[in-house]
Image (tube, rainbow over all chains, first blue to last red; front, side):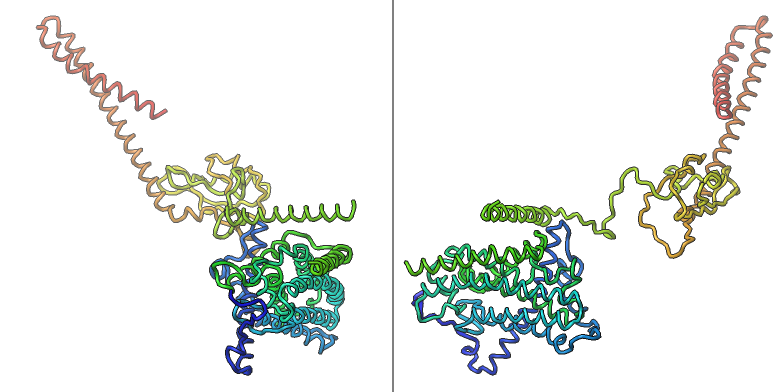
Length: 343
Length: 229
């Protein structure tokens, strides 16, 4: 690592191919292919993990170890009739699945999977990921409102309240990492650049989970809430709200929501890896291997959490966010800023 | 509880909860101890006392049931779920059942038929996954024996014929022995009459001749009597 800390610049796919009009569809193809495989495998993994925790076997019939079960389910969902309820708000209802789907695909492009290559190198990458994450809230609310269904609306309202609340500790904990990056990495490169965040950790031989343990925990909890996963799956809450905001969606429209939920899991895990676990940094194995190993380990923890804890009540959820996570993350941010200015 | 005490105890319980699920996960994967029974591929192990609808016992020595169609079970059944028919078969002593219809849906598993069966050829089956397409769905319990029935009758007939032939033979032998014994006795008596005036050599030879035959004849007569009883 002879490079100095400030002149690190990974190659983007545009630089690699040369022609941006060729690079863009290529990147889109890579992302869509990878995400589809990812979702198929994650759904299978989720079912297996839940089965093992409950002393069951999970899917075993389709393909080796039931690996192709999700593929069969996907084909079934694609071939299903799309039921459109009467008295819906048509534009909102039809746009919502796309609105949930598009941002998550866009956000994946920013992650530095390896040291030398990244699909899109953006100095405001972290901000961009959070902005796209915020769009998911709009999509969920559109779905709930457009469905003209009381369960869907209740789920959407809960989701908006939850996601807006939990975005605060999420961003505050990420912000303390940005402060550290800026302090360590000099002023020329942006602390919001995801490739740069990973690079600094590798260059300084310290993963930020060691410098910011509290921020890491707060980030992980908030990320669970952001992805609407148990124990924070209040927007869906199948025992209370049928299926929450996607009650009225069937077939491929439903699969788009499903797709975005599992891709969101991957995104928050990858972001956690970049922010706290050193990104592609690791011995022996190549960068992408480490990156995905860490990401999927975190996803496993998310599944493990989901099948361990019961769902929070809505007031407990809000109390936890506003009296525990937000104060602690603010304190952590202030302490970080103080430490940086003193040192 | 204070704010931090609550946070601390809450975190502790979360971690211990995750420990519980991790233990189960490892138990399922590493020790292969999933509780799932892959039903059509694996069959459950039933309790020894498990009782289901009745069936006819297949005895080892005859490889068939021993139902003599006495209809005792049909008469005693409180649910009227047994209907059987049978009768005499040419060449064998016992009657044989022809059809034994059983309505599993009506049977209350009371077991009276088992108690009343004179040949003890009924027992509880371990059938647990029976299914039918209509209400009056009757199972013929003799069905599984039907293929073998002809051979069974043939064999049984042969056994009985053999037994009869042996008996006849023995009776004949016994009769012959008796006649021989009687003859010997007569000869002995005649010899005894002649003994006084004649030499010692002649009666000695007659005695040696008669003695063993007399013994064997008595023996035969004894076993024959036992067979008859």
